[in-house]
Image (cartoon, rainbow over all chains, first blue to last red; front, side, top):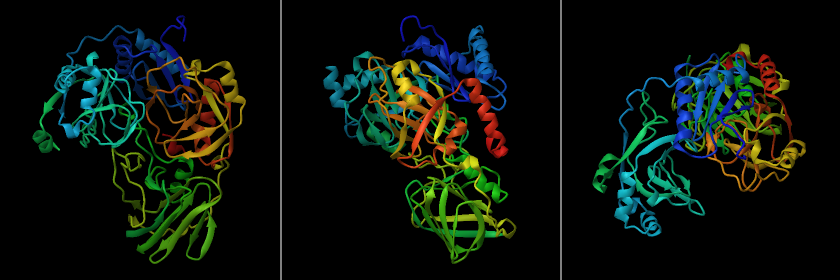
Length: 229
Length: 310
């Protein structure tokens, strides 16, 4: 949209949701506004609220159309957006994800190194140096999009997806990184493999991350990978 | 009461265990899943006195053949105009009967409909994932797909002679060729001519369908190529248009976010009828306001099993 567009924009979505857009690009300040509303909704849900789905620049607010409507949801959201920020709570420690960069588990590491004009070891160090944050989940269960890949190893997507990329692959594209949970086709670059499970199988905490969590990668060798798998 | 054991002799693609689904996890990339046609699924359960969301079997146009190895169990079939063969009888969907040891039960496509549901008087034993037996197709997590050789165990199974009846197919369970939509939320990515073509054009269902969504054939409504959007939330019913102008309606196992603009969103209360259309059936879109959408949902709820909607 043109420069005249002013955010936030509220749009009805069928009979059951509104979409609140805070911008039209991927940027930390825009995502911070998404997170603020997401947390405020969790702390003070309005009558009829069912769930919210935070993404990069927008959040979907899903409600029960039998007891609520779009106008009620929008006014609740506007009120929460306008609230002063809650007192700062100490950010939780970053979640740690293990990664093995062994050649066999990192089929695209050499290609990324060539494209970036770096040695494979320098690509690994750049990846480990990234300070990542979970911006959203999407695509498939447990696919957490981590922002924070250092600029030196930003890569465009491959022109065509590669089939059968193993679950647990550590993938990068542009500023984003993710650890896959299913064996799927992907056009992202496979630079390692992780034994850390995002779908934990633990009913008490079924997903390793919440949106907004910080994430650090820790390198392990092949023996460590085999031991942890 | 005792266990009844069934064996799958044949199952087409997309035949799986479903229940009420797993709501509330979209923020983790997990769609609700559950039956494609939730109303017909609820009807099969309610015909047996089960909770509307008890685990049952979703049968696609690929069909299903079961054999009862031991025990006896009441069952109900609802959804579409499928053909049900059992113990020498040949009937349509929308009836209940008892399946006994040694008997076969065959469900195959009939004159209309894409999805049919089989519920049991008893508890179908099925693996759960995140609190639900619904099968999430691309991961296979949940109760799972059925294939030749799969064993199904129904605990506390009972014949149900009092409920061996035919029940009429509700009007609301017929296929729906007119879909009410709210426009957007990414309508701004489309020219007014493209939006008009979307709303006035005749669309057709295609063979490119699965539990995630169905592609439609119709007018070219390509979004502005110059615009780019960050991936945003998607719902069941989102009408997403890829760069090549192909429209897809997202369904039960939809991805939870996506980077293609959504020109419109189909009302949830119209989706159960929509999925019963078959490839090449025509379909049209009609825009409604947010206020009308809520009113239509409330009207539809009156005609639906109340337990299902909560």
